[in-house]
Length: 482
Image 1 (tube, rainbow, N blue to C red):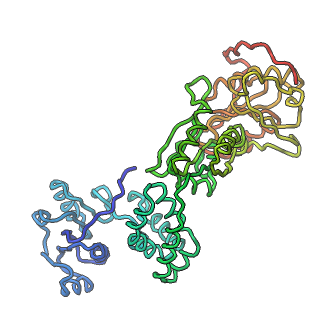
Image 2: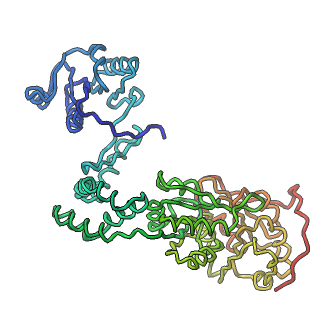
Image 3: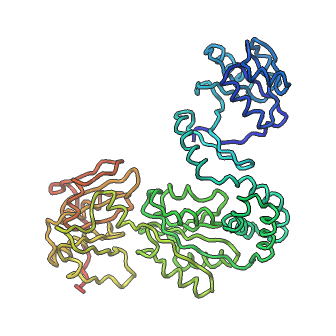
């Protein structure tokens, strides 16, 4: 983040504008709306600025810029077509530690103006850091079309009732839930939109008197395979409404950035061979937070019901009488293979797809190898890199050709995604090369990735490992065929 977004209170504060043309006029109009006391330095003023000066809404101080003019101001704007003068203003402001904006000269600015969507007192500022102002303007135009005009009226109503809501609902979580429900209620939106202020406040009062102060609720949300763009709209809404988010190791930084800044974030991840939070402890946290009245999100990589132990967590919530919901996510088998250009099914190559996990409950390692090793199906293995050698040996032993195409997709859907491709008899070596987290794909469709790959980031790596100097891990005793 190159610029810190701020909203400055300029009411009654002195601001200097250097320039008297159309650009200076636009800046002056914005400053006056913000309540600033505006002084102007320019050789001459255009008609609009001259009228403002005649009305004494601004003060025309001088025709020549003098650095001493900065001694009594909070910030300065240079809006002339004289490059040397603009630089002089910027340097004089810098030496006095005064914020300066030089129009269309980003490197001479200590602050920049964003593109603004104004629903006073609600304001949305959009900035490209000075790199693409036209793009920022286009985004503002889209938001202008999307956002209702009554946002300001809703905010003013909330300001009048804030104290009474706080007195009625003592906890922050209760108040947040109340406002979220109110601001999305069709009746309140309709009354506010039609400027029926009294009716809107009467509706608010009714909602407040009936507000619940009981226990919280839990949303089990699938975060998808990594790319934040694959998060569902409902998942995003739940994340941004949450008081507490319990998240896994497989949830990407992109998705974590979408959590509301004041929400509590609790890591409850599990990784093979590393310190892990026990599932029972996670279940207990979900129950405890909900009983405190919190709105809780359990954020899981991929889909919570695909090798995510989501069912176990819901059973724990059900036993304690906690309200819950499930927001599905795109599981890694769908997202990572799509980004690698590997179709799970194909009329010529695979009529079925099977998902299995390489990390089973202790004592439950036996698998139906005859079924798993069938040809003309795509086998996707979650958490399988550690047992890649075992998978390779068993699949070949039960009839799958050693030349079957395979792919190991590392960090699928993320900018640093890598795909290691080869044959089934290369699987253990490929898995050893791949950074975690990684997904194993076995089947004829894995061979299509070389032609259908489309996603950017790290290039696909099609590795010939027949002569690689890798040692396959020593195999333990193989389980019996199921």
